[in-house]
Image (tube, rainbow over all chains, first blue to last red; front, side, top):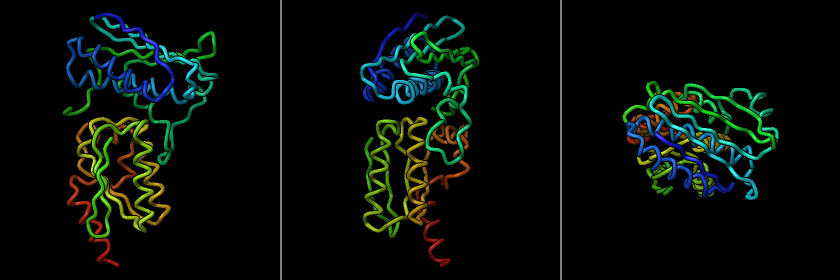
Length: 142
Length: 117
């Protein structure tokens, strides 16, 4: 239980930094390794989305990660400072079989209980992911 | 991510070790380009030591598969950990890649194919 609130610069090195920070936070939550991996993977996909499609690697923009966990659920808000993210999400179509991108959202939705997309006042995108901790789909034999 | 390259007959084998993600996808694409530079286009990727893969990593595999097919080559994958296999199933990529349980089976499939010609 607890909170995790951090901001990261929009550079590729931040992905590993975020995953290490968030992984350490999750390991302190008394969850199984499988559950930790499913949550970490899903939230990391949202972080990648913010970095690549939201802030487009613009180092002057930040990615905010706000996470709250209680006995029953974990909620993760990933907020970028991009432009028109909400429009892109709403007009998104399922990636074609041979598409090289677009599968991150599918993975987020697969592993979470609920995903909400909201536009921030500055035009950035907030992806809010909720995991019902009793029902997180777990990857096999991790 | 570490990429080890080996040859077995006409097949170039890439053994990936570590994370296949946004940061490492470029290295995989570069490794496949180097194979083309040696006039080869039969490629096998062994994923046994991949400890993490996400949508960016999947995207880089799709990209190299397309490049290999453009070069009239063939790509096989093998030795996926069960969770990697599951991610391929969730994203339905298991339908477009040739996936074998073991590297040996994959390499044999290249030999079987060439003996038919």
